[in-house]
Image (tube, rainbow, N blue to C red; front, top):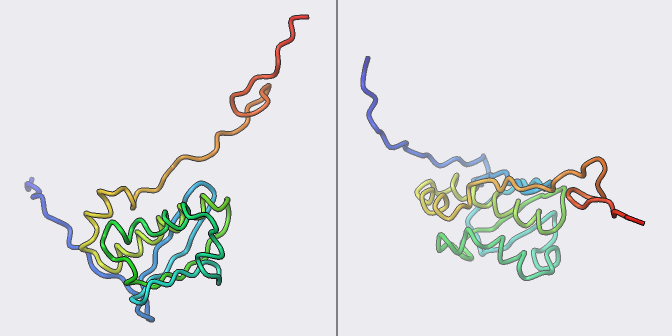
Length: 145
């Protein structure tokens, strides 16, 4: 049998016919389809500007984290559609999608994105309600008398 050598995988740029990179992001119940291309830093979410869609500053900051980590702030235009979940989950899904799209556009950024944890899907979801409980873990009130 041959010995397999540790060979570094050569990542290649993946673009569509319009010169955009695509990434699918997921968080809780939200799914985001994200396209990025070189531009001035505009972020469009479901056809509206980022500031109007995400009113909270924390959500906008979460979306820009991959660009800050890779020193690519205001270098890419982002166009995305997102559905499902709430605004917090949608912001996390867009962040995940932007990271994957950045990885497809500039494969040399992969180690930075991987180390920052941006390429890993956050698997935490809401725990289901159990039979005999008020909520997932909250028991019904016990009355002795």
